[in-house]
Amino acid sequence: MSKTHFGYQSVEETEKAGKVAEVFHSVANKYDVMNDLMSFGLHRLWKKVTIARAQVRPGQKVLDIAGGTGDLAKAFAQAAQWGINGDAQVWLSDINASMLRVGRDRLLDDGLALPCVQFDAEKIPFPPNYFDAVTVAFGLRNMTHKDVALTEMLRVIKPGGRVLVLEFSKPDEFLQPIYDAYSFKILPWLGQKIAQDAESYRYLAESIRMHPDAQTLKDMMLKVGFDEVDTHRMTGGIVALHIGIKY
Ligand SMILES: C[S@@+](CC[C@H](N)C(=O)[O-])C[C@H]1O[C@@H](n2cnc3c(N)ncnc32)[C@H](O)[C@@H]1O
Image (cartoon, rainbow, N blue to C red; front, side, top):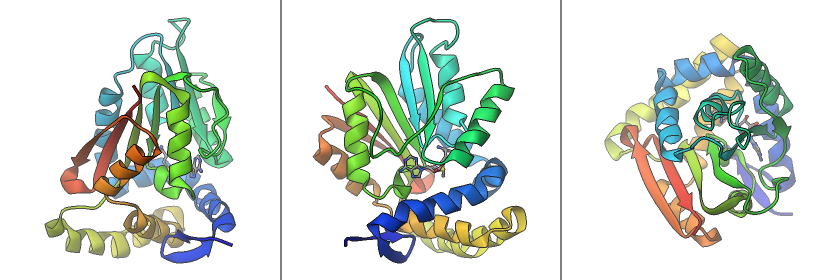
């Protein structure tokens, strides 16, 4: 059997999705407050850049993968004029029912009854060439076979469409010591205080370290068949946005 990583642990490939699911079932209810606290609100800025670069226009079709509590889907509903323009479609999706439930309820509170669909990004239940834009924010690093998930995202965008991958990355050298201290000491402590779950936030820090750096991810996207990939490192490389284009 093939092995993969779950944070710093080596696990059977078949075990990883279940372990990731436990993390997100556990944190779903405190996910949004923890996101704001952990990133000092910066995740909102990183998502704003992603939303702007998605260039969604009225009437377009958009899929947010690993969409969790729905930040991106909500913004895309406005950009696509969902509910006003009859052609617009905005789908919130996630593999995890607890995250999707929190996302669906948040959207409903904002008056947005968007379609919410539960699936694994390694098997996207949509036909080829369907979406104008597909996004995945802070989700790719949790996937067992990243190349398979990226191939699926490429398959479902139209020619001329784009896949936007927002993910933690490798920060500049000078930030590394403070970033390490913050991730391995403060994050688990905050996780324990707010979500009564230090372990899930230790996994977060470890999974970030195991994720490919910006150049490696770009190479992976080109290898699975994207015709062009633009990379934007943000906040000293703490996160990177990759935009893959299909001609
Ligand atoms: C850190 S959250 C990100 C949520 C949201 N996109 C955001 O930026 O706030 C990661 C999400 O990825 C989802 N996920 C993990 N593995 C997945 C997979 N194989 N397919 C789809 N979603 C997955 C998790 O359930 C979780 O909701």
